[in-house]
Amino acid sequence: MLLVLLVILVAVLITVGSVRPIKPTMSTFERRRRANLGDVAARDLLRRDQLLGGILSLQRIIIGLAIAAIANISIVIWAWGWGLLVILAVVIGYGTLGRLRPIRTVASRLYNKYENKLLGFVARFPVVFRVIGISDISGDTVAVRFDSREELQHLIVNSNGVLTVDEKRLLDHGLSFGDKLVGSIMVPRSAIDTIKKTELLGPLTLDDLHKTGHSRIPVIDSDIDHIIGILQIRSLLALDIKRSLTAEKAMEPRVYYIREDQTLQHALAAFLRTHHHLFIVVNEFRETVGLLTLEDVIEALLGRRIIDEFDAHDDLRVVALRNLHDNNHPKNLEDV
Image (cartoon, rainbow, N blue to C red; front, side, top):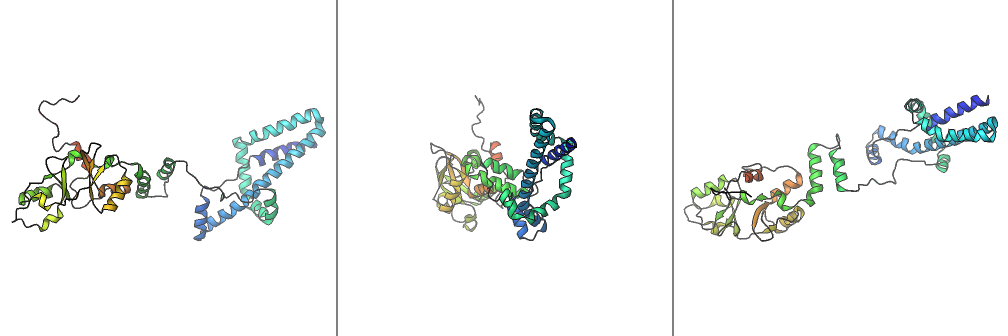
């Protein structure tokens, strides 16, 4: 009789020990947000969280009582010698056996069948279960944390069904925006269209300027490393073509320069401070290496192109690779 009771207690111990209540995959914040909006399912999940700790405490109590009963029966049947060995084998082995798939499947089915009744039992004695164990496992005191920006970006990229493609792109580019440098998005030197300061703004010249597809053209003195102003194409629409104006007379003489190794965050702050829309990008030797527009920075922040009526090309860096200005291409060239 004692042996049969021992086998039953061991079976109960293994079954109860293998029970793993399913925790909600939805975060506590999201469950509370939905519950506040009237979501009944989310409200039930919150209530379950508050009572699930009591079930875990009840599980520990049953396991402890079962081990104590098994120890007493083992000592009665086999005395202290063999009885202690049986107790040790049960304590060590019940967790291993409980991880077997068939046993876990049976235990999960039994638990899911009686979970509501167990939750109701715990709800009747909240004070008792608050004293003997955890009363709430919702994790309110544990803050969700990320140890790196890359981890947060990984979560955003893999948040399928929560964020749209555009929202993912916006968040991802926003997080990496501060690390990007001006040189990574600027219009390269080889794609810059310029006009000499002595150029007369006649009908043919104005037509050529409009064909460039740019709203602003740098005005140069002797070469591109000596930019002295910015010519705004829109301002030329009201120009009296009967008067012989040069680019120098029609240009905006104020020129802003920015280093290619500056961050886009610095560039955006500079655009807002100066109320200007175009910066000339220079290197450490103050040589012109490109130009940067406010539009370029906004596009890098948003992660998408901004196309307006003056955009003749989708990507000026691709245009630069075509080498439109035929830079450094003599007949007998040799790259080393």
